[in-house]
Amino acid sequence: MCSFCGFGGGAYAVGPPVPQSGNTYVDAIAGTTAIAPNGTATIGYSIAADAADLNFVTANYDIVALLGGTLVVVPTAAAEDVRDAVTMYGQYIPLTFTEVADFEDGAFKVLGVSGGIGYSARAVFPGTDEDPSGTGYEGYLSLNTTQATIATDADVGAAGSRMAIIVHEIGH
View 1 (tube, helix red, strand yellow):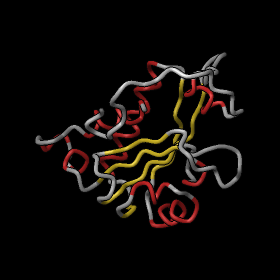
View 2 (tube, rainbow, N blue to C red):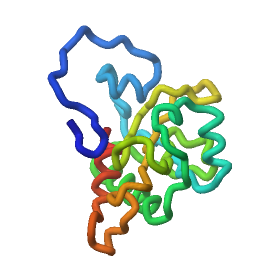
View 3 (cartoon, one colour):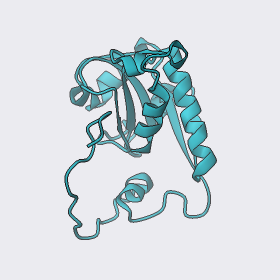
View 4 (tube, one colour):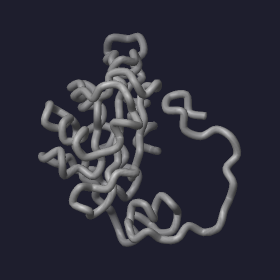
């Protein structure tokens, strides 16, 4: 089991093939198709930066009930680590993350959570919440801002593992 987010643990049964959903990201994760069979795919992401972003999440998605705690804006240093992490991913796999100006338009949303989730971070992609436009599903990276591993900047010294946790969680 993942010590950061609780994912995994135990044996995984191999079942019958998963039917295609029609959503490229869902089908890629299920192993029924490739995200980018002919090149690089682009995923728009957004980072919660103000109360309007948090209100949008609370009003439109079920993720709040899953996380518990209180939604908060993503601290500036953590937001920079997210940007660096998605840039690194793009160097090794045919997937490009592009930060979108309007929080609502991000297919992958980064949230701060004060308490609640019980882990340093948790990622859910493509998630279980349908986009309000009806065009797909939302994914989330939730950073627990009360955990020292997220709240402490690496240059301070102790518990500076935020970047590794962010890279790990996006990998889910």
